[in-house]
Image 1: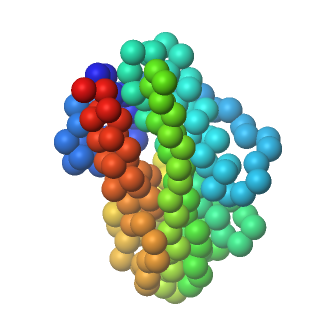
Image 2: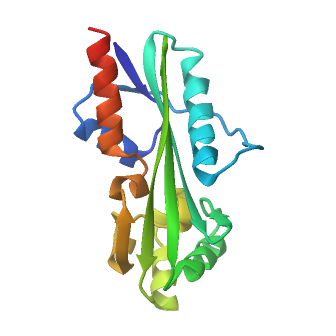
Length: 188
């Protein structure tokens, strides 16, 4: 059975490799905007579903895994920064605060659909403007929701985490392992 990761995220690729599955990478080119949703969790699950379906439509012989990760500070959604200025602005907002990170997942194959999400709360220390600028001058924050990689340089400013650490990186590993393993077992 073919397994396809509908993402080119190096972090997701590494985590899926850690789980021991053989898989292909076919990034979703879908940038669909979800217009209606009931909760933040519902929102990220719909984004993940859209990505998985965009790859599945041309790969109906595979199990396709789609993911999306979003950062929320109060009622504001912090996506990927598009400029150095936007990166600096986001990191200033997150400083000395707790924010929510939610990863949605959607797995689809012939006769099989599984949708779930996982969340974590991250509290940052009170870091300096100089530290923010130093980080914004690297390449690390620009393809990450909330403008930071917890497993990278900016992890030094994490005061506490409550919830699934791997969801912050972009894939709830334990749940993915469980559902993919169950699916493969059922298909034998």
